[in-house]
Length: 187
Image (cartoon, rainbow, N blue to C red; front, side, top):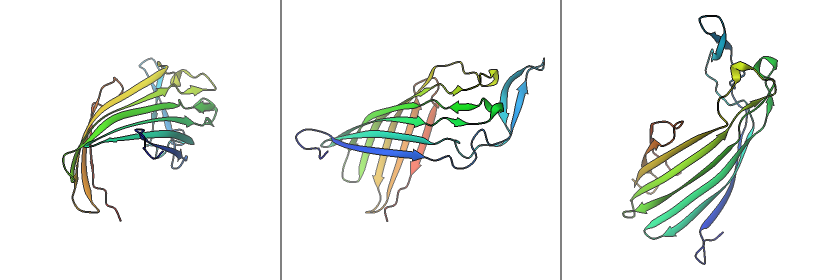
């Protein structure tokens, strides 16, 4: 939408993730056993470089300017296609779909410096397997990952800005903290 008449700007998007690289079921695996020789888990012999699954993420973003602040939000759904991963890996694997949402505010101190405050949340559903294998058994129905972010951005020139974001996990499964430094350059 055009954001007129008191309505926010609404932007629709679609992201597609292809199964590039080696997924977690493509790399070598080793069964981990307890002291009695009972299998208790799996260790990957090398790090996967991809997810191994196709995923589609339709979403909406909302932007509402209220000078000198801008309110924003987003909502999306990640649908990951199930994939045959072989008998030893549980047969057909259906990774849990994800619901994502976030909201926040950006505040301009002047034409070069701005501050942002936001919250992002993901609800990840349980991965299911065609064959029930104890090694892959999950003890959750869904995982909640939420983080609170504080950001500072400084425009260095017409084509360059510097952004620093500090995120703090507020749910049990979120990373405790994360620091991101970006230097985007427009060509």
